[in-house]
Image 1 (cartoon, chains in turn yellow, green):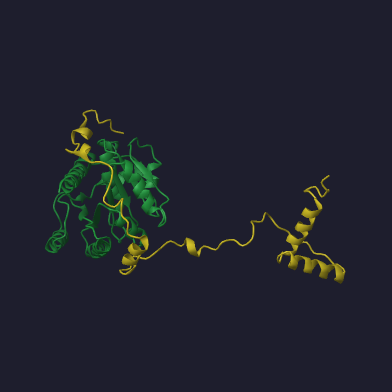
Image 2 (cartoon, chains in turn blue, orange; image 1 turned 45 degrees about the vertical axis):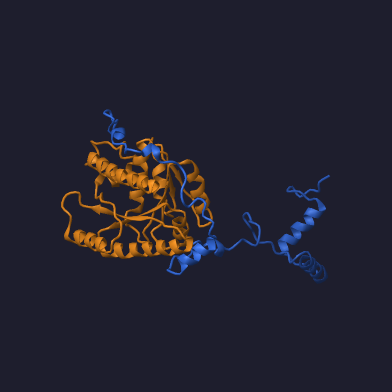
Length: 113
Length: 223
């Protein structure tokens, strides 16, 4: 790193630099942004912001998953499927989770007291 | 008159180099400067992660939604706000230009650069009509030889003069030191003269452009 021992950096300071004040002609601009956008779009200056096309996740983020299969009596199976539908089209694991939450079953599998 | 937007829809015209050279030179001379890095490649945000002690403020994460507010907030307190735009025709560019006090259009001495620069001029003209105010602009030649101009360079300069486009008299010359800025992440004042060739020449060149810029701003404000 050079030390600028001889002060050339400030020696070349342009005259009048201190007279330039903060502010600007565009600060009080009242023209609606959509009009500016329209003027730009007319000559090909279009939006490149892709955020409106980003897919918003419809489900909460899951941790690691595994499969869980079971054979069950038809009547009980139908009751469970209907429960999931009526609760807001829950997936089956969400249905089980909902029931466990209602029962107060914690991570250890025990009912909370 | 602090908001200076550096624009050319063509990539590689020298926008980021121009912005960094002018912004850091003015900051090293004692001016208060913010650089708004609106280039998705974030070259100046990246530069700021280095060890430079240059007191320039750098802001990144710029979107179409926050560009205008960011410019307004910085312009209230800083003498100079530079906006380095991406090398593409975008809504971000048109929004930034709507708040500009001066648009600097860097171009290399090539027909492709000159044609794309004309798109920036066209955009400025459209916005002037829309906003009902003058948006001054100036073309700045970049990467030109500091010694003998090439024939192409001479022809293109002549062409732009013929079109009566306002231009900086000084050019941002092709200099090793300008490339070294991004590698060493230092300002011109901080570059080691033993490691990089032509640092003094680059400092002189940068100071000439800054001088021209400051005189232009003062003249415009006085008018």
